[in-house]
Image (cartoon, rainbow, N blue to C red; front, side, top):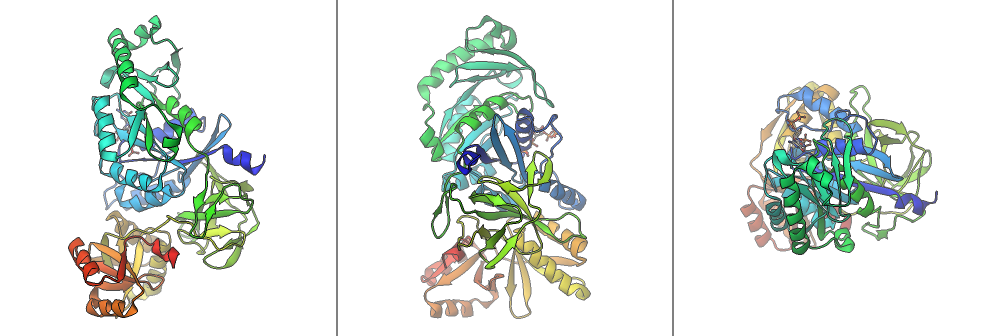
Length: 530
Ligand code: G4P
């Protein structure tokens, strides 16, 4: 098959949601309907959501499992589907945001009872920023939740995106029986099933089909007739280009747990979701059909086995054909590297791949060559946009509790921050190490891993800062003056870029006003422009 054909048959996406909305359940059901697994529960996602911060083993266990669920690929109706997993826990939001740079579309899961939640808002903001096409799945329709019209209203208002219902619920709460496909004009009724693909009880294109009453009840069917008229009059019809540009989100109702609305979602996804398209590098736009390989690392995962310090770097292929054992150019290190055992991830099994194509994700065993955002090419110097580190919101100093293990501590902190777990800043005098994160849980993970993987012991001491911003300027005198004025609040990142720690948003605003020629960057994207 030629490259263009391979690209056309790929769909790479992420399922995102506020924790508990049903992301894991839906992922499993898509794998189930896609034939990748036989029973739900076979693949567990990397959920750290129910873990208390003191439950280290649980964190470890789940961290390990998440390697195998970082990418889940399966073939369905001739299409290669790549699902990229995103952590549900908010403390790992940064990982999720970076994963969004490696997908071509997303499915957003919303809980019908809770409606739009904090993470739903944040994730949608990132999607809108990137113009990522979004499909929305309103889950848990089997519970007494918001009325469908209210949900639509809330989504449009709170998420700032036009929505168009693609399916419509038949009944709700304990009377929820399935969905009507507004676009195909048909109904498929499934027996509810929590663990396997359910039996199809009825499939009809006639909403007056008398057999429907038997399966969904007279009241439900009458309500559906009324709703269909209203919905067709009230809402935008589906428009492919608005969806592809990220302005219009087709909406699906269902219950992932009971298998309702899942097949409709999967089938429509395969019809309308985009295949890999052009991606923006700093230097130029990269087309997937280009013969030469390009790809970037969006995630790095430490090996679970502490005796093997190697890690897996996840590379999203952007163009060309990736081949095993071929030399590729690592643009940041200006060196050629080849990979003898690149891994692909089919459902929950990992295997060595000989080749991969745009949209695919390969796992590269790495002994320390990669950082998040690194690019592989066939010789060109390229950096892809949008794989940034974000300004951390919690900053803590690392206190070494075992001076005999200083080297191990340094190494561990350095390697873990390369993985994107957290960010490291150094402050003089005394070479103080400050770790910045977007969530509390990260500190527990770091402390635990330092002890178990590196044999080093540390604690963290709180610092009174709420944000770290990278500083750049054309006016070096002003930057020097600023650094002199605020020595305690200045540190340096791993590449020796100066960073300002702000005690409050107000202090940051003041600094911006008083030092107008200094730029205070809240993501690390600026590094690519220099
Ligand atoms: P997440 O990955 O977004 O965090 O959510 P997850 O799928 O784990 O679902 C969160 C809870 O919601 C789970 O219950 C799950 O069974 C339930 N759930 C998911 N889809 C539906 C649905 O369509 N209807 C109903 N009623 N519940 C649903 P749990 O009790 O927290 O976990 P578990 O013991 O069932 O695994």
